[in-house]
Length: 442
Ligand SMILES: Cc1cc2nc3c(=O)[nH]c(=O)nc-3n(C[C@H](O)[C@H](O)[C@H](O)COP(=O)(O)OP(=O)(O)OC[C@H]3O[C@@H](n4cnc5c(N)ncnc54)[C@H](O)[C@@H]3O)c2cc1C
Image 1 (cartoon, rainbow, N blue to C red):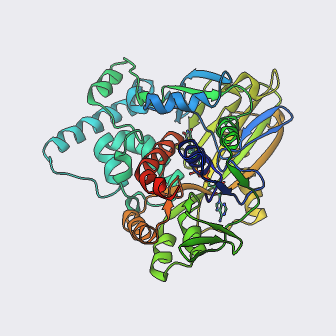
Image 2: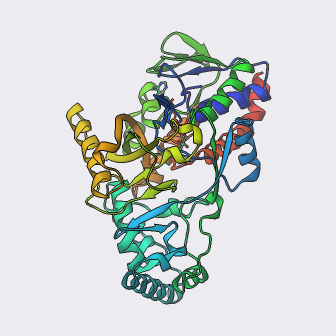
Image 3: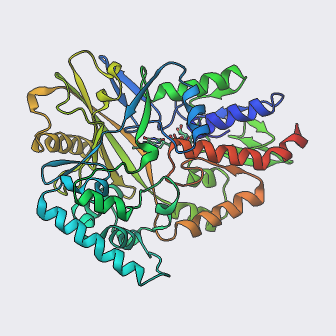
């Protein structure tokens, strides 16, 4: 198994559960596995270093399995998240709460929405060519300009015409506004939107890594071996088997590492490597701010479309669990995306960190004297970006992997903007697809 994040660890566990007789080894480049689900606890402040993570799923069976890895170590929440628009903390999702907008913004939002509703009715075969079209044709100019366009430009760091709209249709990804909800919201009646996430769960202690550790411990208990601090740089076929880094010989390779890294290690044909390199992504800086006092709001996280502010979202992570900060104190987690083409120097990181803190101060969320300490974490792979050639590039890489019998899955192993539940589902799908072959090999 290549990669010891959620996908690699969960797939290893499931393989061992189904085929107890086989040996499963996880090759992980970091000293401690966990991938994006890492947590650091500093002076009692809990920070999830891969950004704000919560546990939710529309799939009840998957959700209950996810929670089973935490036992009693769980806090349940009713989501209270906001979008900061013109100084107002408007409840998320916007389309269900437009009554919280200033009257002129509210009017723009409703007029824009009704206009595109009428327009789409006359275009039954319409399909969006890119994300910008999807946003404007489903939400209308009012909501698009107030929130969706500036917010999405900030998170994706690309022109929205360069981003495909196909992924937004995937179940559970982005909520599509329902006309009855929007009209109710216009007259002041709130409704619940993006319901699969409206209740969510979080580990009581240990941050999001506690969820990962539940899976890892079960995998180790089943006999999965972890080879940490082992960067996979070479995978070579030898007489029907695979040699990893010229040292470990295995019968079958499952991969969850980023597709480009996999194709380099395989020394794949140039056109396949080129396709894997075309799969785009954003890097991610996560900035943790420990406060000497409690957070100013009880919200969970806040979306910030304001273009003057460097971050797109911040989370009051101390509101996720009473154990996430010392009594009487609070913690904030800020997320900043960076296009992959930008090479970050230490000075850049320092600048971004400073701008992020200034952003919180400008928005009057904190005062400089509130800060106990600040820490920053870099994630090379943060968000897969669905550029227009995404599906073509993926197919090219997967055709090649299929031809040599290597399976790849996970956020980077499939190159999809997947939450944890979707990763688990994809692992299950993969397992049922390959199970009969593995049976023969056992
Ligand atoms: C900001 C942010 C917020 C999120 N919020 C949520 C949320 O609220 N809820 C939710 O369900 N999901 C959320 N997610 C998604 C979630 O983090 C992912 O779905 C999940 O962690 C992906 O796991 P993975 O194993 O596929 O990838 P990763 O966690 O990236 O694991 C890949 C592993 O491969 C290793 N690796 C890479 N290259 C090599 C190599 N050459 N050799 C050996 N090892 C290698 C890495 O070190 C890593 O451990 C969020 C993601 C982000 C970025």
